[in-house]
Length: 423
Image (cartoon, rainbow, N blue to C red; front, top):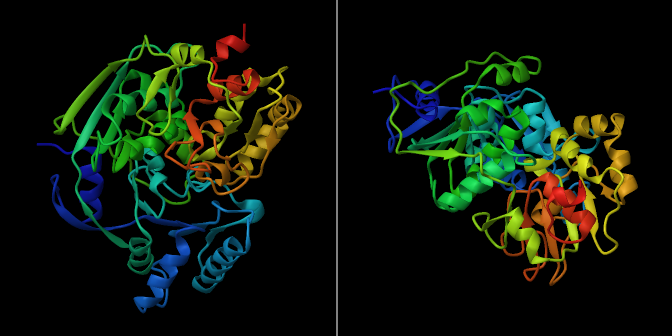
């Protein structure tokens, strides 16, 4: 019996000819990641282990992106602690200030995570890199500490669910809608500790950026990782960026899946995930009729802060004005994205519409800063989570949507379809 992508990568990195779901393996890692929230605790555990150096200075990244630019003294101290450790350990890939980006946008953009890699990060959305064909998953700070010291981590080999998307995408339907539809179908525990493998003609037509959006939200269905087989698009994206050699992996034709779920996406439309779970999805045609008034729109995050996402939003916002009572916050997810959006006039469109444009940061996504919600406020967000209190006060509400819907909602001051603006 053949192996899935997830099984192959774990087998290769644990020195095994094959592995099977349920087995426990120790595997060598290609790359390890921490951020300003998770790294300080990992450093303390690293010291407790008695470790004197990281396993390899070019295989570790520390990205200070959550509460930066530093929002308060505690955030400043966390970053200082991480900065000093990075200097002491000779960590090459340390990012803050002018060269920082949202970690899960930045690492693929710089060619630090690659097809066939085994990657862990002390952040749940590390699964984003599965869009490039890497087995990438989030871990806790203690596992990060051990990984930084040894270059290894243990894994229970997951079963794989294969998702096949066929048909044609309707206007304004994006990768965000595909993954929200999927989570709405299977639920937030529908892929618990499973590898999710996305395939089919629709996936083949998606850009690498939109594939990253899908893999990013695998964790919102409980998935261990969200994999897409590397193809020509993947290799074109990676080859001009790769910082080291890589070996793409694909599933065997006779690989065994725990389940295969097939979708015809042709009748699908953009969806909105209502509070307080990503599985509570409602088609925009229905959601727009509810007249749900909003106070804030956030366009950004590791889910939808890339250039293509900003361009979608700009298509709706060009020549428009944000509703008087709405705060529109736009945050490009990296320095490169910011610069390109500036050069190509997108930032001007956002500015003229009345948006606040921020530097690359996770900020509003996790209720960190630069966009906290007050009690009773509602936000439409292109991010990945809408749990209770996710973006601020526990009595606030977050509605997840794609950039088209988010931009239209900002203009009309309520949850709205882009078709209502682009008449």
